[in-house]
Image (cartoon, rainbow, N blue to C red; front, side, top):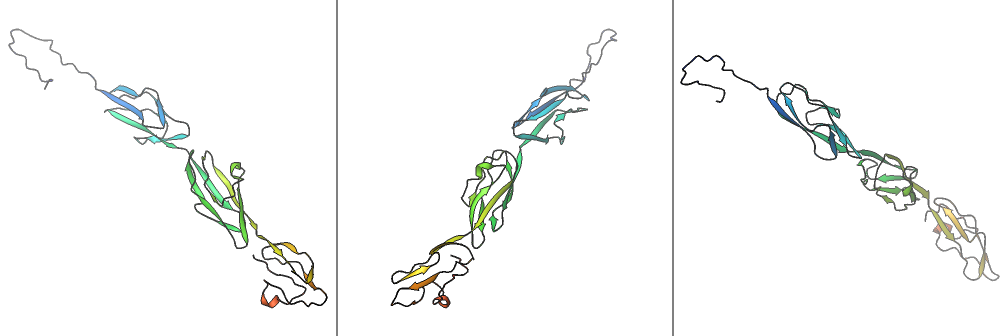
Length: 238
């Protein structure tokens, strides 16, 4: 060992042999692996029992600091009472946002209606399913007005950069066209072309036969209503 000394061939008094000591010096390294940087001196040489100078973890845009590898949670860090070499890493994570999908009355949603999405990412697809007698109209949002013209019943919200909690699927009651026709040998009294909402009734229509003819019934109505005259088609559902 270098700290063991044997003085040889002594021929006179020697009274000034001195053992010299130097304090240990340790390397302390601070790293930001990705998505951020370190402000301050990232490589420090600290004497035994000393403290490092302060360093601060600074995230890149759209990221946030989550902690140091030694368990410290504040972004600014001083290592105290250093007694060994150390390498300490700063951890960062991408900013995340809450995206919520809602359904207005008369329909439901299929898919994840509450999602956590990283900055600039896309949400998973969500589909709008109308109740019986209704149809999907569009999506709407005051926070993301770019989707207000989307009429596809399946939505993938893209490029999310903030919370969005008002995406709504809108539905309307179906409306059907009902046409009454006499063909030859008679006329109709009433509205021959009617727009009727799902489940509602047509207005009354009366078949008036020409001279020499008799009313023989309606086509394409339930058998129980075939000879109704005047006719009211009830509960239109297609």
